[in-house]
Length: 342
Image (cartoon, rainbow, N blue to C red; front, side):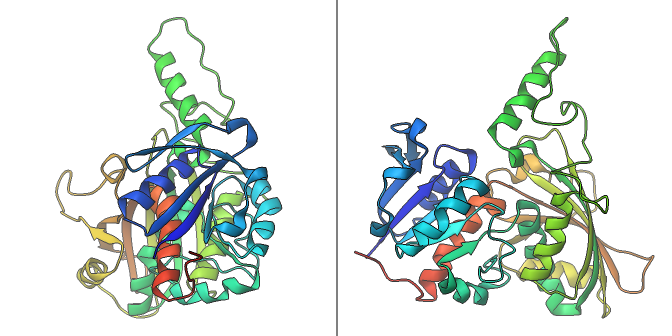
C-alpha cells in the first residue's frame, strides 16, 4: 500500500529535486501531486519517467494526501502549512518558518529521528537550514563518542541556496566577464558574485552576525545538544551547487584523527574521502547529485587540548533540502507513525 504525496513549490529548484528524490529512492507513492502557485498552473515537471502538470495551491484538496512536502518559502508556509496540517495531511516544511517553534520538531533523521514523534501538535515537521543539515550529520557521531564543547565553522555556500534567480545571476555575470564591453549587474546579491566571495548570507543582526549564522547556532542546539557552543561565518561563493564547510571542533574527551575517521566511516549518511595527497578530498562539483555528506581533511587541532579540524561537502539541494525532507517521510513510515489514506 502506497502513499499520496503533494509537493508544494514543485516548479522550484528544491521542489523539482523532491520529485527526483522520491522517484530515485522508490518512495512508496500511489499518487503524486505537483503543486505550485496559480500562475504556474499546468507547468510540466518530471517524476521518474512521467511528465506531470502542476496543480494550483489554492484549489487543491489536501485531505486526500498523506504527506505534503512544502518548499514554497516562509510566507507561503506560514499561511498554508497550518491549514494543510488541519486536514490530516502531514506537512514536512523546507522553509525557516517553523524551525524555531517549540511545538514543531526540527529533524535530521540520522541525528534525531526520535524527535519526529512531536509532530502531532501541529501536524508539521521542519527541515533545517541547508548549512546546518550537513553539519549535524557529521557532528552527531563525534558528539556521541567524545562530547562536543565548541564548534567554529566557516561555510562556503553555493548560489543555489539562494534560488534559481541567484544561479541565473552567477551565470549571467560569468558570461559577461568574457564579453568585451558588457555590463555586470547584481540584483540578487549585495555585491558581484562571479569570481568573488561574499561574507554575507541573509540579513545582519544587531550583534554583527548574519541571520544565516544565527540559524546554524540555534538549529544545532535544537537538533543535537543545547549545550554545544557554536560560532559561524557564512560566505557565498561562485559555485552553482554544493555547500562546503571548514569545521573546527573542541571536545570534552580525547579523540584522535584516526579514531574520528573510523567513527565517521561507520556513520549513516557520511562518506569519508581523506587521502593526504593532492586531490585526496571532495569538492562541491564531486558532491553535486550525491546523497552522502562527504568528509575530508580530518586532522588534529593542536591549539586546544581535545580538538579536530575537518572539511565537509554536501549537495545543498539534496541533503540540505529535498533528500532530508523525503528521509523524514521515510522515517515516519518506518516508525509506523503514519498510515496510508488509501
